[in-house]
Length: 338
Image (cartoon, rainbow, N blue to C red; front, side, top):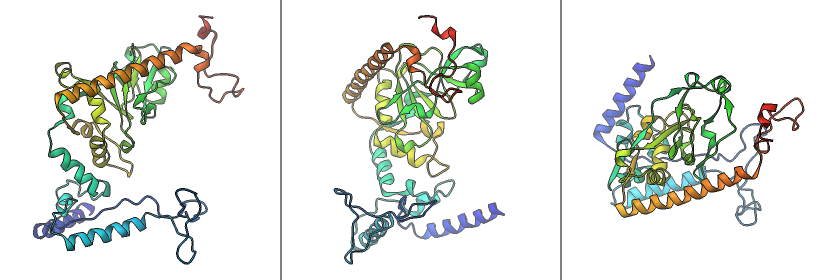
């Protein structure tokens, strides 16, 4: 029944689109003006300097909502179309019809998203899959490690999006990783790019640079691994690729192309097919050199951090029978070097 209805809707839309490919205005609404959930109290607009409540002409309180922006932008949109002959640079009906799922998500059809992809397509660009490896194969840690072996597992929350780094959490026994997550994981190498699959609009991309990546793995359900290709390392060094993936041109693509929920989740296909603008060779080398220097400083700082404290002083304290006095999994064997 649903399939038949969808087919009829698709047919009707295509019939309309064949006659007129009209412009479409889209908006994202996040603030509705009220605190949703318990209480449902109004959220008031405030002066950005003092924080005091803003007031209207009749001294009334003003609800802080995105709908005011939507109304203003839509009025501007209709006025612009009726008073200018300039070609519309945003979405049109064809952008919906041509999509295999009739995708009408505002993030994909917004003016900024359309202008971004058109800007990329109008310049020299490459697909990520043509210049780097997006790792697909996993390893079975149950066949390479004993149950008691300690391993690190990188997950999406371990990426520090603002800094572009990856933090290693405390090592876990192999059986604990299998119980909590899975035994099928990515093997992580030095200078890998770790891409978070969830909330791509946050620029969840980190550069992993350690002296030894032994017993370090990544969870396939939370991250993807982008790796430098040896045959293209001189032309497209991984440091430049890392820089490119964190630019607005790629961030917006990841955000607009990821499907599913309103937050979006990337797939390996999304990552493989992201379009990366390619500057001149000199700029690529300069950017790669800067990222190398930055990465070395971060690595040096991390090494210094670990040299300051004993391992026991860096263990995350979890709830225990004597909260705060016992760390999880503290045994006499851990104290061999004392």
